[in-house]
Image 1 (cartoon, rainbow, N blue to C red):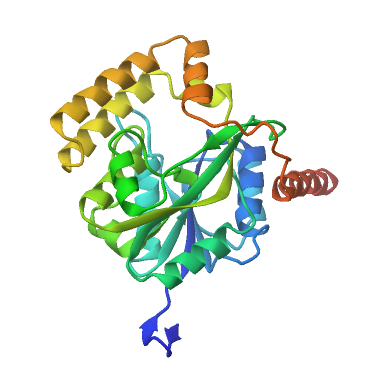
Image 2: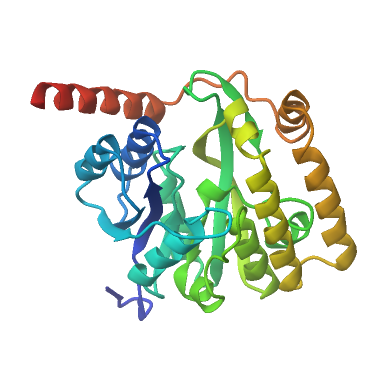
Length: 312
Protein backbone atom coordinates (compact mmCIF):
# COMPACT_ATOMS: atom_id res chain seq x y z
CA UNK A 1 0.00 0.00 0.00
CA UNK A 2 1.59 3.23 -1.18
CA UNK A 3 1.49 6.42 0.87
CA UNK A 4 1.78 9.05 -1.89
CA UNK A 5 2.30 11.91 0.55
CA UNK A 6 5.53 10.44 1.87
CA UNK A 7 6.39 8.30 -1.15
CA UNK A 8 6.89 5.16 0.85
CA UNK A 9 5.19 1.83 1.43
CA UNK A 10 3.11 1.68 4.59
CA UNK A 11 3.86 -1.59 6.41
CA UNK A 12 1.24 -4.07 7.48
CA UNK A 13 0.71 -4.54 11.21
CA UNK A 14 0.78 -8.26 11.94
CA UNK A 15 0.14 -10.23 15.12
CA UNK A 16 2.46 -13.18 15.78
CA UNK A 17 1.97 -15.98 18.30
CA UNK A 18 2.31 -19.72 18.75
CA UNK A 19 0.09 -22.43 20.21
CA UNK A 20 1.08 -25.85 21.56
CA UNK A 21 -0.64 -28.59 23.49
CA UNK A 22 0.49 -27.22 26.84
CA UNK A 23 -1.69 -24.13 26.38
CA UNK A 24 -5.02 -23.89 28.18
CA UNK A 25 -8.21 -23.20 26.20
CA UNK A 26 -9.59 -20.44 28.43
CA UNK A 27 -6.51 -18.17 28.50
CA UNK A 28 -5.89 -18.82 24.80
CA UNK A 29 -9.41 -17.82 23.79
CA UNK A 30 -9.48 -14.74 26.00
CA UNK A 31 -6.10 -13.58 24.78
CA UNK A 32 -6.87 -14.03 21.09
CA UNK A 33 -10.30 -12.43 21.46
CA UNK A 34 -8.77 -9.35 23.09
CA UNK A 35 -6.21 -8.76 20.33
CA UNK A 36 -8.33 -9.90 17.36
CA UNK A 37 -11.86 -8.82 18.33
CA UNK A 38 -11.51 -6.34 21.17
CA UNK A 39 -9.33 -3.63 19.60
CA UNK A 40 -10.32 -0.11 18.56
CA UNK A 41 -8.25 -0.66 15.39
CA UNK A 42 -7.69 -4.05 13.80
CA UNK A 43 -4.50 -5.80 12.83
CA UNK A 44 -3.94 -6.20 9.11
CA UNK A 45 -3.06 -9.87 9.56
CA UNK A 46 -2.40 -12.42 12.29
CA UNK A 47 -0.11 -15.43 12.01
CA UNK A 48 -0.47 -18.27 14.50
CA UNK A 49 2.05 -21.12 14.50
CA UNK A 50 0.72 -24.44 15.82
CA UNK A 51 3.45 -26.68 17.20
CA UNK A 52 2.60 -30.38 17.12
CA UNK A 53 -0.76 -31.96 17.90
CA UNK A 54 -3.41 -30.10 19.88
CA UNK A 55 -6.19 -31.34 22.15
CA UNK A 56 -9.76 -31.27 20.82
CA UNK A 57 -10.53 -28.29 23.06
CA UNK A 58 -7.61 -26.28 21.71
CA UNK A 59 -8.54 -27.22 18.15
CA UNK A 60 -12.02 -25.80 18.73
CA UNK A 61 -10.52 -22.52 19.93
CA UNK A 62 -8.22 -22.41 16.90
CA UNK A 63 -11.16 -23.05 14.57
CA UNK A 64 -13.12 -20.19 16.15
CA UNK A 65 -10.49 -17.67 15.05
CA UNK A 66 -10.69 -18.46 11.35
CA UNK A 67 -9.26 -15.10 10.28
CA UNK A 68 -5.84 -16.08 11.61
CA UNK A 69 -3.34 -17.42 9.09
CA UNK A 70 -2.57 -20.70 10.84
CA UNK A 71 0.72 -22.48 10.17
CA UNK A 72 1.27 -26.00 11.47
CA UNK A 73 4.72 -27.41 12.19
CA UNK A 74 5.85 -30.66 13.86
CA UNK A 75 6.65 -30.58 17.55
CA UNK A 76 10.07 -29.01 17.92
CA UNK A 77 12.77 -31.36 19.17
CA UNK A 78 15.21 -29.51 21.44
CA UNK A 79 17.41 -30.34 24.40
CA UNK A 80 15.20 -28.34 26.79
CA UNK A 81 11.88 -29.16 25.10
CA UNK A 82 11.29 -25.50 24.27
CA UNK A 83 10.12 -24.80 20.75
CA UNK A 84 8.90 -21.20 21.02
CA UNK A 85 11.88 -19.54 19.24
CA UNK A 86 11.55 -21.86 16.23
CA UNK A 87 7.79 -21.25 16.08
CA UNK A 88 8.23 -17.47 16.12
CA UNK A 89 10.90 -17.64 13.43
CA UNK A 90 8.62 -19.77 11.26
CA UNK A 91 5.97 -17.09 11.67
CA UNK A 92 8.45 -14.39 10.69
CA UNK A 93 9.18 -16.26 7.46
CA UNK A 94 5.48 -16.06 6.63
CA UNK A 95 5.21 -12.38 7.58
CA UNK A 96 8.25 -11.24 5.61
CA UNK A 97 10.75 -8.41 6.11
CA UNK A 98 8.74 -5.22 5.49
CA UNK A 99 6.10 -5.25 8.21
CA UNK A 100 5.50 -4.39 11.85
CA UNK A 101 5.08 -7.42 14.11
CA UNK A 102 3.11 -7.30 17.35
CA UNK A 103 4.26 -10.10 19.64
CA UNK A 104 1.32 -11.85 21.28
CA UNK A 105 1.61 -13.97 24.43
CA UNK A 106 -1.41 -16.26 24.59
CA UNK A 107 -1.88 -16.06 28.38
CA UNK A 108 -2.50 -12.31 28.49
CA UNK A 109 -5.28 -9.86 27.67
CA UNK A 110 -4.52 -6.79 25.58
CA UNK A 111 -5.63 -3.23 26.16
CA UNK A 112 -8.21 -2.26 23.54
CA UNK A 113 -5.91 0.49 22.20
CA UNK A 114 -2.76 -1.60 21.85
CA UNK A 115 -2.95 -1.91 18.05
CA UNK A 116 -3.97 1.73 17.52
CA UNK A 117 -1.19 3.08 19.77
CA UNK A 118 1.43 0.81 18.17
CA UNK A 119 0.41 1.88 14.68
CA UNK A 120 0.66 5.54 15.55
CA UNK A 121 4.17 5.34 16.96
CA UNK A 122 5.61 3.35 14.06
CA UNK A 123 3.94 5.48 11.40
CA UNK A 124 5.28 8.63 13.04
CA UNK A 125 8.89 7.37 13.20
CA UNK A 126 10.48 5.50 10.30
CA UNK A 127 13.61 4.83 12.38
CA UNK A 128 11.81 3.11 15.25
CA UNK A 129 12.64 -0.62 15.35
CA UNK A 130 11.65 -1.84 18.82
CA UNK A 131 8.62 -0.55 20.75
CA UNK A 132 6.78 -1.50 23.93
CA UNK A 133 4.76 -0.28 26.88
CA UNK A 134 3.88 -1.01 30.47
CA UNK A 135 2.20 -4.16 31.77
CA UNK A 136 -0.25 -4.51 34.64
CA UNK A 137 -0.03 -7.95 36.22
CA UNK A 138 -3.09 -9.69 37.68
CA UNK A 139 -3.86 -12.93 39.45
CA UNK A 140 -4.69 -15.91 37.26
CA UNK A 141 -8.42 -15.10 37.09
CA UNK A 142 -7.97 -11.34 36.50
CA UNK A 143 -9.81 -10.53 39.71
CA UNK A 144 -7.03 -8.81 41.67
CA UNK A 145 -4.16 -6.69 40.34
CA UNK A 146 -0.72 -7.65 41.62
CA UNK A 147 1.34 -4.74 40.35
CA UNK A 148 2.73 -2.74 37.49
CA UNK A 149 5.99 -3.66 35.79
CA UNK A 150 7.52 -0.40 34.74
CA UNK A 151 10.20 -0.22 32.08
CA UNK A 152 12.10 2.92 30.98
CA UNK A 153 10.88 5.08 28.11
CA UNK A 154 13.73 6.76 26.20
CA UNK A 155 16.18 4.75 24.09
CA UNK A 156 19.31 5.61 26.13
CA UNK A 157 17.61 4.58 29.36
CA UNK A 158 16.25 1.43 27.73
CA UNK A 159 19.78 0.46 26.66
CA UNK A 160 21.26 1.00 30.12
CA UNK A 161 18.35 -0.66 31.98
CA UNK A 162 18.78 -3.73 29.79
CA UNK A 163 22.17 -4.33 31.38
CA UNK A 164 20.34 -5.20 34.60
CA UNK A 165 16.96 -6.53 33.52
CA UNK A 166 14.86 -7.12 30.44
CA UNK A 167 14.10 -3.53 29.31
CA UNK A 168 10.86 -4.50 27.55
CA UNK A 169 7.65 -6.12 28.70
CA UNK A 170 7.55 -8.99 26.20
CA UNK A 171 3.77 -9.17 25.62
CA UNK A 172 3.68 -5.44 24.77
CA UNK A 173 6.47 -5.47 22.18
CA UNK A 174 6.21 -4.67 18.48
CA UNK A 175 9.12 -4.53 16.05
CA UNK A 176 10.06 -4.01 12.41
CA UNK A 177 10.46 -7.45 10.93
CA UNK A 178 13.33 -6.56 8.55
CA UNK A 179 15.99 -5.65 11.15
CA UNK A 180 14.93 -8.56 13.38
CA UNK A 181 15.20 -11.06 10.53
CA UNK A 182 18.53 -9.51 9.58
CA UNK A 183 19.80 -10.40 13.07
CA UNK A 184 18.68 -14.00 12.66
CA UNK A 185 15.39 -13.74 14.52
CA UNK A 186 14.83 -15.41 17.85
CA UNK A 187 17.79 -17.42 19.14
CA UNK A 188 17.31 -21.09 19.97
CA UNK A 189 17.69 -20.80 23.73
CA UNK A 190 15.65 -22.52 26.42
CA UNK A 191 14.21 -19.36 28.03
CA UNK A 192 14.18 -15.58 27.71
CA UNK A 193 14.41 -15.71 23.91
CA UNK A 194 12.90 -12.23 23.74
CA UNK A 195 15.53 -10.67 26.03
CA UNK A 196 18.26 -12.23 23.89
CA UNK A 197 16.79 -10.71 20.76
CA UNK A 198 16.19 -7.28 22.29
CA UNK A 199 19.82 -7.26 23.45
CA UNK A 200 21.01 -7.96 19.92
CA UNK A 201 18.72 -5.25 18.53
CA UNK A 202 20.00 -2.68 21.03
CA UNK A 203 23.64 -3.67 20.61
CA UNK A 204 23.30 -3.25 16.84
CA UNK A 205 22.34 0.39 17.38
CA UNK A 206 18.66 0.22 16.46
CA UNK A 207 16.24 2.79 17.84
CA UNK A 208 13.90 1.71 20.61
CA UNK A 209 11.42 3.15 23.08
CA UNK A 210 8.70 2.31 25.55
CA UNK A 211 5.63 4.38 26.33
CA UNK A 212 4.06 5.09 29.73
CA UNK A 213 0.67 3.57 28.88
CA UNK A 214 -0.38 0.08 29.95
CA UNK A 215 -0.73 -2.04 26.81
CA UNK A 216 -1.18 -5.47 28.38
CA UNK A 217 -3.02 -7.04 31.29
CA UNK A 218 -0.77 -9.94 32.17
CA UNK A 219 -1.89 -13.21 33.76
CA UNK A 220 0.58 -13.66 36.62
CA UNK A 221 0.57 -14.88 40.20
CA UNK A 222 2.33 -17.67 42.03
CA UNK A 223 1.98 -20.14 39.14
CA UNK A 224 4.05 -17.85 36.93
CA UNK A 225 6.76 -17.58 39.59
CA UNK A 226 6.79 -21.36 40.03
CA UNK A 227 7.11 -21.85 36.26
CA UNK A 228 10.21 -19.65 36.22
CA UNK A 229 11.92 -21.48 39.07
CA UNK A 230 12.31 -25.00 37.70
CA UNK A 231 15.42 -26.74 36.41
CA UNK A 232 14.51 -26.35 32.73
CA UNK A 233 14.12 -22.59 33.13
CA UNK A 234 17.42 -22.32 35.01
CA UNK A 235 19.26 -24.09 32.20
CA UNK A 236 17.42 -22.03 29.61
CA UNK A 237 18.34 -18.80 31.36
CA UNK A 238 22.01 -19.79 31.33
CA UNK A 239 21.77 -20.32 27.56
CA UNK A 240 20.15 -16.90 27.23
CA UNK A 241 22.79 -15.15 29.31
CA UNK A 242 25.55 -16.74 27.22
CA UNK A 243 23.81 -15.57 24.04
CA UNK A 244 23.51 -12.00 25.35
CA UNK A 245 27.18 -12.02 26.27
CA UNK A 246 28.02 -13.37 22.81
CA UNK A 247 26.47 -10.37 21.02
CA UNK A 248 28.55 -8.03 23.20
CA UNK A 249 25.70 -6.46 25.14
CA UNK A 250 26.94 -7.67 28.53
CA UNK A 251 30.46 -6.99 29.70
CA UNK A 252 32.19 -9.93 31.33
CA UNK A 253 31.47 -8.67 34.90
CA UNK A 254 27.82 -8.01 34.00
CA UNK A 255 27.49 -11.51 32.60
CA UNK A 256 28.88 -13.21 35.70
CA UNK A 257 26.77 -11.04 37.99
CA UNK A 258 23.65 -12.16 36.12
CA UNK A 259 24.67 -15.82 36.26
CA UNK A 260 25.18 -15.75 40.02
CA UNK A 261 22.05 -13.72 40.77
CA UNK A 262 19.70 -15.74 38.54
CA UNK A 263 20.92 -19.11 39.72
CA UNK A 264 20.64 -18.11 43.39
CA UNK A 265 17.19 -16.57 43.05
CA UNK A 266 15.76 -19.47 41.06
CA UNK A 267 16.81 -21.89 43.82
CA UNK A 268 15.20 -19.90 46.64
CA UNK A 269 11.96 -21.13 48.26
CA UNK A 270 8.91 -20.06 46.31
CA UNK A 271 7.59 -17.78 49.04
CA UNK A 272 10.83 -15.78 48.89
CA UNK A 273 10.71 -15.69 45.10
CA UNK A 274 7.16 -14.40 45.34
CA UNK A 275 8.34 -11.70 47.72
CA UNK A 276 11.08 -10.54 45.37
CA UNK A 277 8.77 -10.73 42.39
CA UNK A 278 5.91 -8.79 43.95
CA UNK A 279 7.66 -6.33 46.27
CA UNK A 280 11.10 -5.58 44.87
CA UNK A 281 10.33 -5.83 41.18
CA UNK A 282 6.80 -4.49 40.92
CA UNK A 283 4.96 -1.33 41.95
CA UNK A 284 1.57 -1.66 43.59
CA UNK A 285 -1.57 -1.80 41.49
CA UNK A 286 -4.08 -2.77 44.18
CA UNK A 287 -6.52 0.07 43.51
CA UNK A 288 -7.03 -0.77 39.84
CA UNK A 289 -10.51 -1.59 38.55
CA UNK A 290 -10.87 -4.60 36.25
CA UNK A 291 -10.84 -3.08 32.73
CA UNK A 292 -13.67 -3.50 30.25
CA UNK A 293 -11.58 -5.52 27.79
CA UNK A 294 -10.92 -8.17 30.46
CA UNK A 295 -14.63 -8.43 31.28
CA UNK A 296 -15.48 -8.55 27.58
CA UNK A 297 -12.94 -11.31 26.89
CA UNK A 298 -14.34 -13.37 29.76
CA UNK A 299 -17.91 -12.84 28.51
CA UNK A 300 -16.87 -13.82 24.98
CA UNK A 301 -15.44 -17.10 26.27
CA UNK A 302 -18.62 -17.88 28.20
CA UNK A 303 -20.62 -17.28 25.01
CA UNK A 304 -18.21 -19.50 23.08
CA UNK A 305 -18.64 -22.30 25.62
CA UNK A 306 -22.41 -21.95 25.46
CA UNK A 307 -22.40 -22.17 21.67
CA UNK A 308 -20.14 -25.23 21.87
CA UNK A 309 -22.44 -26.95 24.36
CA UNK A 310 -25.56 -26.24 22.32
CA UNK A 311 -23.83 -27.44 19.17
CA UNK A 312 -22.68 -30.72 20.68
